[in-house]
Amino acid sequence: TGSRYKSHLAAIDRLLQGDYFFGGEAPSYVDHYADFVVTICYEKFLKPVEGKSGVTLAANAPKLMAIVSAIRARPSAALLPKVNPVPPNLVVTPERVATWA
Image: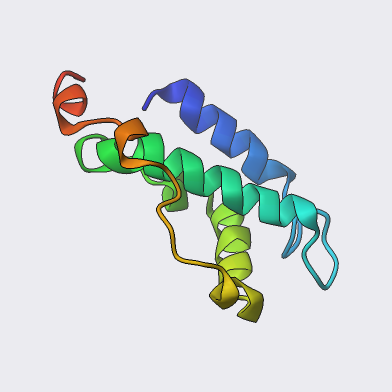
């Protein structure tokens, strides 16, 4: 993970002012979409390199991760089926991670 990644996350985090993307008492579709995108990106790209890079979403985008956590804690989230968010064959492999400096 490079400085562009961290800058992008910081920019998103600066835009967030409330408990949800557009503030208010309840989430909108944008908050659910953020959860979807964060989950896909984390599982596919970030999780495999987290141990090597030491970079975490929580450290670089705490407001975004608070929104994602709030969405995942809603009672309706428990009703969703538990499936792999990314097919295993699309996740960055340990062999590929080993090639990164």
